[in-house]
Image (cartoon, rainbow, N blue to C red; front, top):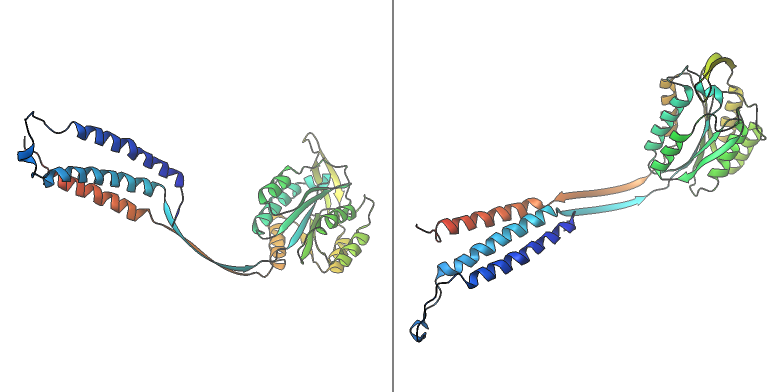
Length: 325
């Protein structure tokens, strides 16, 4: 048996002053009379009523002690766990170029992508996940980690305008590869999300794809948004302009097929959610986990014992030890 709140047992120290007070009180509770000798009273033994007074006090202490133990929440745990877990390494590569502020998603492409990415992260409890962002250049925001809270904060804090504008798909993929190669899992994959065509950076997407293939890393590519004229807002929200966007689907399909991944196209929030849900199912690691854990609260017997002690105390006090005025 274990205690959920063992610190509550310090309340048992209350019994010490109570016992001391009772002993001190009993010293002056007996009437006295001065006599020349006690020999006539030598064979007289204390009555049962006198002993029962001590029993009543002991029952009161026992009731208090049982309540304190109950407050400490005694529990029993059953453990049965034989697991063989092999996690997956995943790096999210998110496009944060200016075109991601387009409002064909609600409230924007970038906001919708972050929301879906956070949901995806929460579903991958056994995996190490990293985060890379790219625009005209790339930046690694989070190494592979199992710390969900830190990773989600990194996604939330990623903002457009942090990097030079443009779309460097090859650089983003290369940064993701640099992050994922440090992982120890056998299964490695990159999810690259963009809404444009590679027009910046030092590494061509085809070169980054060949490197990914050599390293055995699958790349899932996602084309976000609609082609044509879109309204975009500057990172500070001061002005809105119209620009033409076109997703280089051929390049994204080649990256995915060359690395054993898959290309997806999402033109609204619902489709984007479905894309991440499909990737989640594709990259599910088969786990042989037998886990059996139960926790039983065992405070009820202690409460019942305290109640029994208190009831017995009352019975003795108002029957055998009852005083008649």
